[in-house]
Image 1 (tube, one colour):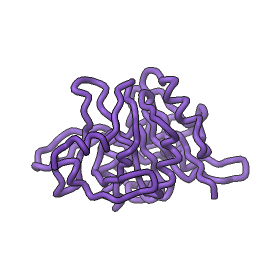
Image 2 (cartoon, one colour; image 1 turned 135 degrees about the vertical axis):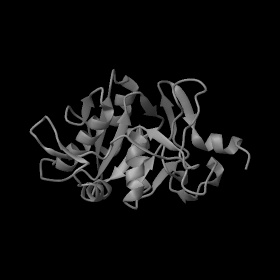
Image 3 (tube, helix red, strand yellow; image 1 turned 45 degrees about the vertical axis):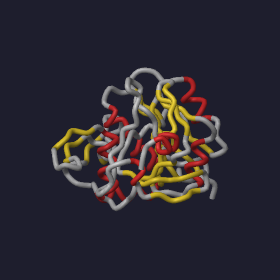
Length: 233
């Protein structure tokens, strides 16, 4: 079955034309229309709404989307990243990018027992080295359908379920912001991206990062493999 990727684009202000070019020019079939993007000041609710739409989407012959790809409006990439991520056959896999403000650094939350980028568990994928992390920005993240389905069941609880204003449809707030402890046990507040990855880990899914992905965040370039090669062991 040919992969069909539902582009879940949540944005606050504007969508960069470079981003649109990336999501519409891929060898993989991408689903991108008025139902796959939401403009909202509550990005967490927008992403959760898009996850619900992803599960509901059906093609002309009743087919489902095989993957959901979360995309930020100011993130774009070199080459056909969507196809590369699909080829890696991971539950959750992403391309990492730098922050858009000085000092333009990569931000990661590592898995337990790892304290630097070069200490991450790794494997060789079809398109380069892949590392396992706990969380980072979600602006170029591919998620298998089964992951969303399992998480929908796992978090179908009173404190996670709500009904959307559009058709009163039941939604599970997978992208809810939350507070949890950092590696030193200190409570911290985290955004919807880290919140999703935290819930994915609770659902027994791991998060992987394709280190060779070359992305730009509002024009700021970055490739995590280059960062790893420059970082002392």
